[in-house]
Image 1 (tube, rainbow, N blue to C red):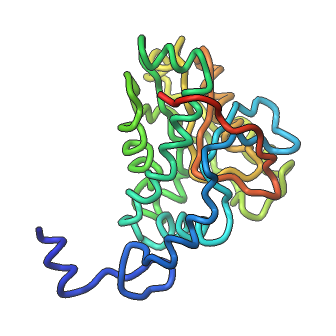
Image 2 (cartoon, rainbow, N blue to C red):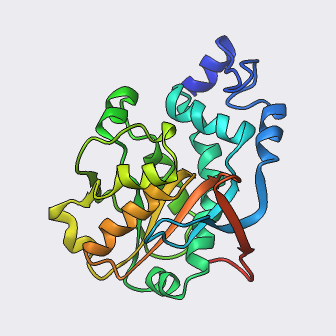
Image 3 (cartoon, rainbow, N blue to C red):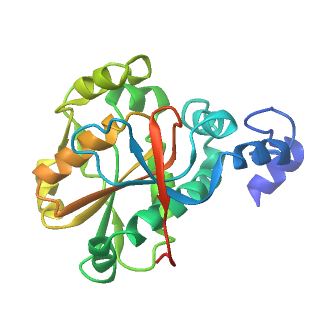
Amino acid sequence: MLAELLDLVLPATCALCHRPGGPLCPSCRDAAGECLHPSPRQAMPSPPPPGMPSCWVSAEASGALRAVVTAYKDEGRRDLDRTLAGWLAPALRAAVGADVAAREALRGRGLLVVPVPGSPRARRRRGDVPLMPLVTRSVEGLAGRATVADVLRPTRVTRDQSTLDAAARAANLAGAMVVRERQEGVVRGNVCVVVDDLVTTGATLAEAARALREAGASRVLAAAIGATRRQIEARATLPGPLP
């Protein structure tokens, strides 16, 4: 109720065009929606980094959609969490639905959904880990036993990935993540779906998958909101119903 009263006094603005009508005005929502695939697609960097897990995405990471992610993460627009979670959830369901071991885990022992860890530098700058609310909301759409498991941590300071090419990104992240020692028992023997917001070269997901496998994960998959067209080769869409 308080939020609604505040909106009457100070109407929310669109995160992209800054006109009244937040968090996204109809025009900007439509522009971002043009980047969404009709159904989730499997995406794989070309060439893929060693250890890259099977990854599903909902959209192309370009234009207005990428701007929405940036506004959410770096411009304080946390009111976009429902929108972004709504774009992430189909990719997460697709990743699980396409994999026999993941479906069995969801119905039985339980599935671990693992967000990639933010760097200490990014956490200090942002004051939180923006990916966590998106993953938590997205997991609610899975029918079965799924747990958000924040088990990964950085092992060292890495360079800003945005300035690096594919080879440099892989080298920058090599050995940069580990499963927290006290949580290795949580990971061991379980199926994990590692989640990020956007995928470019796949280096982040490959490093997260390596850390989870070394801690004993039985299988690692991946999901993200979107993947870049230049770096990612879209594969076949998922057939049949999702869980």
